[in-house]
Image (cartoon, rainbow, N blue to C red; front, top):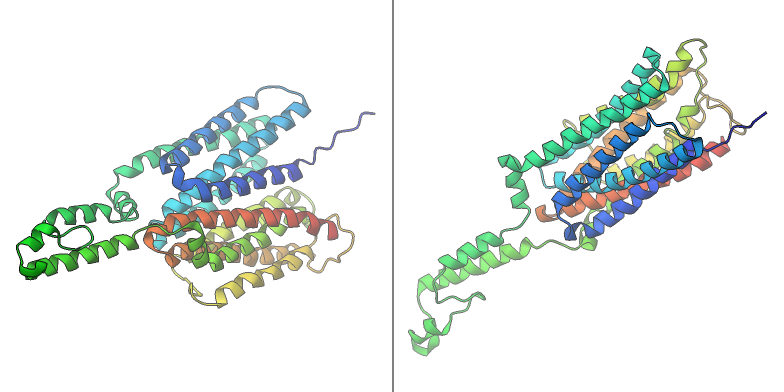
Length: 404
């Protein structure tokens, strides 16, 4: 009798998706000023598209299990590496726009998760064989990535986008234009030059026009100084509370979803067993998470200055024991307190809505705490702390699953 080799696919997939996400998000936060936005965003999308096309082709290529596992893990690593750069760059780009666009961006991410859950349900309901379903799964992101790439390349043609992108680059062009309009007797430091003083006794300019011009020039220089981008550390000091919040939210969420929630069993036998986890775990979480993100378009409470917001985020840690006390199987130490399906579904609703709501508030509040020219830096930093929360939650999930 031959034994089946255990690959621990889910464990390796989690590890090899979160590690590059954390590493490359950190690199993107530090190195993004040295690499142009177009290369980071368009380049990442091109490489992701190529990797998805190769993966779709490999579905039809027969190979031994060891080679298939190795290629799959390598693909996961590289897709998440480029995805980290893409996500961080997009958050930085959205940070330049008004707050409501950050909300739309976050809602779109939640909607993507719901789409994936619906695809899973359609595959189960249609009784499609595994090879055909896998081919459909990988062709779909190829189309989505291509559409996204084309949309990004068309973005500079929109007057709205050009306005906010130019606004973040400072007012140096205004300073240069103003210097050309100032009288020749005024130097760049706002002091009169020799030609101006030679025409006035004792070298003191007495023309009111010169005084007005000097004051105008000094005010323009002061405005120009305000447009200089702050360092990464200076921006971090301003947004550290929101960085803590986004890390906490994803640490709690990834600690139990999906590592713990995917092992919850229904009390009803029959066909519902095949649909229970796709519906009550994945679809319910992603739809409610999207609703939580969308709520912030209409309600933003608590405010970004309130101490109640970090307290609300920390209170989500209560969901960890609540979900661990659901009907998770196999279990060895903890009792089952919420054995029926409805209890699990209700806990999942509040768990996912609060996750989406707090995530969206954190990401949209951060750019508001800094000057407009630092919005991109704030967005890139928040993406790093988002990835940090995902990694911490994924690591914690192994321990939590063992103690149930």
